[in-house]
Image (cartoon, rainbow, N blue to C red; front, side):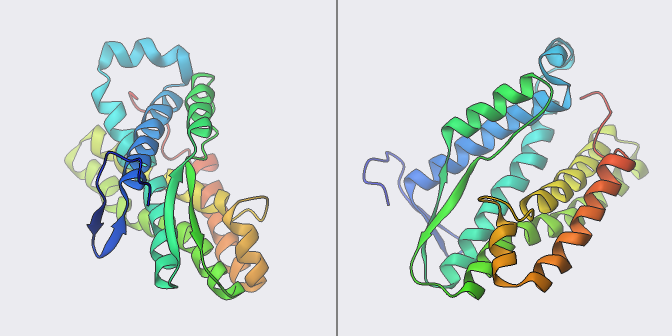
Length: 224
């Protein structure tokens, strides 16, 4: 817990978040919302378009899809770490958040908002479970966003359709990307614990992401 934070801690759904952690989660959520808003309009070239059409709808979509996907991914790591009696807190990486916004201006995005840091003794299996929690939540969020995609077509609402489509696409991509067994990504830890478990989650995630995002183009297009 940070003694220097001006925000008091909160217990949410039985889980304690320090003041600094809540602040870092909010900063990461907002920064990623801005970054993905810019990314989905094609970078700096699309700023005029969203200014003319209104900033609120595209920012709302980005916060509700990419922002939520990233934050729940990180909170999932924390939940499982605490389950294993770890002291665990999310810390935003401000330099990486800045890079996310700057890269989005160029029409691509590199987003690593921060990480859940935990301390305590763990077995490889427990380490694997903590790492796996984030991608599994992203796969679950694909299911959560699917009814919105269907409902948008039924209601004839472009906004609801875009919310559903981007929620599905972003979470599919995040699950696959984070399971790549490289560097600080979750996949390296999961593979170190169990190669069969890693393969059983990674392969379907890649196929889903590739099929939905790159073949079908789900999540792209629309007014913003």
